[in-house]
Each structure stands twice: as structure tokens, then as C-alpha cells.
Length: 195
Image 1 (cartoon, rainbow, N blue to C red):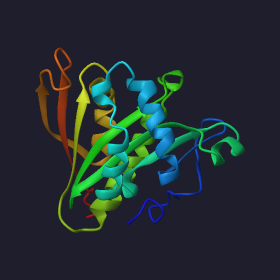
Image 2: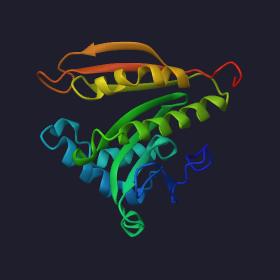
Image 3: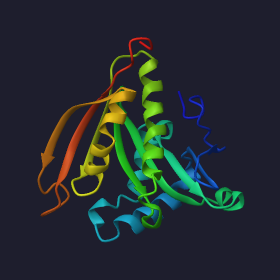
Image 4: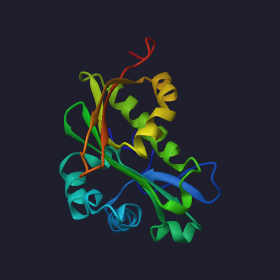
């Protein structure tokens, strides 16, 4: 099932509480914006800039099904791109979803945009689990100083939705000397009445 079948149009927009903002499914037209945001957010950490490799992975590993963009500004600006944040996730193996990349431009961080993106992503995971073709897992590597605290902050909300943390490991120097990561593995569990 695509993001469109889950009620998240790839070309249209889903209105959010933020004025003149929308979250929608990622399209190929968004690739330049994503690469630009990646350079802005991770500019002083070149090991985290994947560039063209991101677009290849999205195409090859079912990334359009799970990836989202946050757009802001006037309707005209959104038509031209206007991407201010994104979440890229892929499915390298059936039932194994990997959170590949996730970023919001610095001037909009701390306003709940990342959590809005993640909540919509969680909906896509639950839709995938309802398809009933086996168990569904979510894997991710998180920067210890930024992304890991974000996930910790929302752990109870995720668990209430059925996104249950099953494994957590510290990975020292994962992103380079002194740049630690955390590995998280979640299972997507349907509530009894949904199974």
C-alpha cells in the first residue's frame, strides 16, 4: 500500500495545525530539496550526508511508500517545493522498515514538526502491519546527542500506538571518533481489536 492509499497523498497535501504547512508523501521532485536540507542540517558532519545515495536507496528499497516531506509557506511556494523537513524510510526486506534519514531545517526545529512527521510515519507502519503478511519491525541508527533523546521523549506515545522498543544498543564511534549512536529496533504491534 502506498502513502496515497493510506490517506497521505503523494501530490496533494494534508493540512496540519501549523499555518500554511502540509505533510505529504515524498516524490522524486523533492530530491533536490532533501539533498539541500541534508547539507544544511548535517553540513559540519559530512559522514551524515548521503546525497545521491539517498535517492538510489529510496528508488530501490520501496522508499516512496514510507517517506514523507514537510512543506511550509504559501501554496505557490509549496508547489515549487518548499520542503522544510523530511523523513526517509525504506523496506530493504519485507517487514523490515529502516529509518534511513530524518531532518528538519534548524530554524524550524523544536516546533513539533519532527514529531508530526514521525506520527504520520507511525500510521504508515500500522497500515503495513494490518496487511497481515508477517511481523513488521522498524530499525534505526540514531545520533546519541540529538535523535536518541527525541525518540526517548516520545517512547510512551509510540508504545501507545503499538510501536514497541524491543532492542537498544549503544554504538560507540559509529559516526566517527567521538560520534556515538544508538541502535533501536521496534516491533509494530496491532492492538487486539485490530489484529
